Length: 150
Image (cartoon, rainbow, N blue to C red; front, top):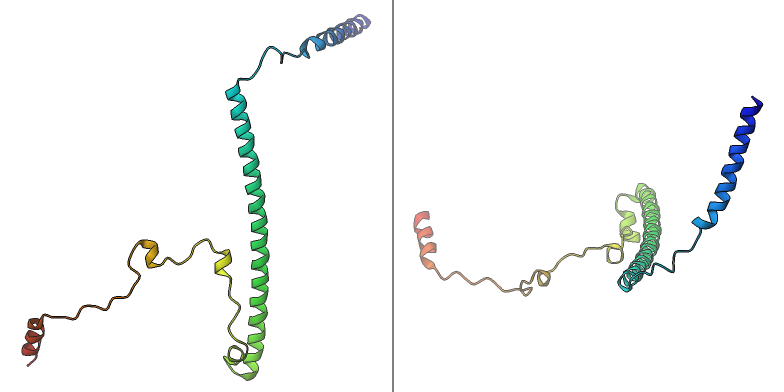
């Protein structure tokens, strides 16, 4: 048993000495032998620039999202207050009295928070001006209708 412990201790000591001797060899700097190409360096800079741009866009999105959520909470609060006040007032003075006295309910700001807008005729390339329809000049259809009605 003592022999086994001595052998184990000796082999552990030998491994520790070998590992400490091999560490400086593994830590040698081989950077002087390898130099990245100019194309690689350019692509690396482009990648880092794209990554920075992405991070900026992501931060801007998060800020916009936080602004949207705050605006939505404020709108929901205004709308709930308006609805509660309307219900109380209408219960006392009759349906529609609050609307007549204080005006319509708060409306969500579609111009600031919506991605889409209603398309117009110019958007589709059509003529947006109004042109009155041409009058019917075919009297034969009208005459036939009158004759058939008699």
